[in-house]
Image (cartoon, rainbow, N blue to C red; front, side):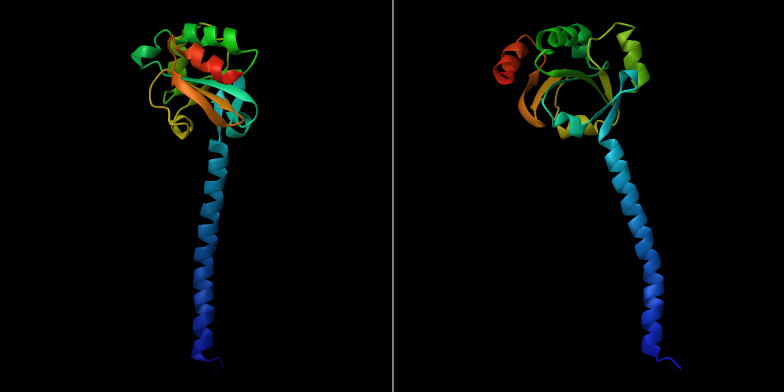
Length: 162
């Protein structure tokens, strides 16, 4: 016959092993979701990951069709891509918007850069994007310079992209 203490330990382990297995499965699922959330869907079926942004120089331009100051963003994005595309990867990141709505806003206008969709805003928030349209110049993943995508942007980008 087993002692009451032995029975209690066995029951404890049996009960809590199920809880531990459940907690472990949740943690693994969360890790998978975080890894998948590490990349954004982009136009043309591409994906852009944080890992890619840690390699080389990237000019990320954040915008949204609901932002009044983003109304002419496609012209500014194309101009930035023409000027800086030879020295940096240029990518347009649509902030917290349904991809179909962003495509309707662009109305078939061609952008010379990929458009990536940060639907939940987590990617943009990770770079402390505070205003739209905003640019963030990344060098090997670190923010080199940031600012509004306005007339002074070229000077800021040029000073940091050397």
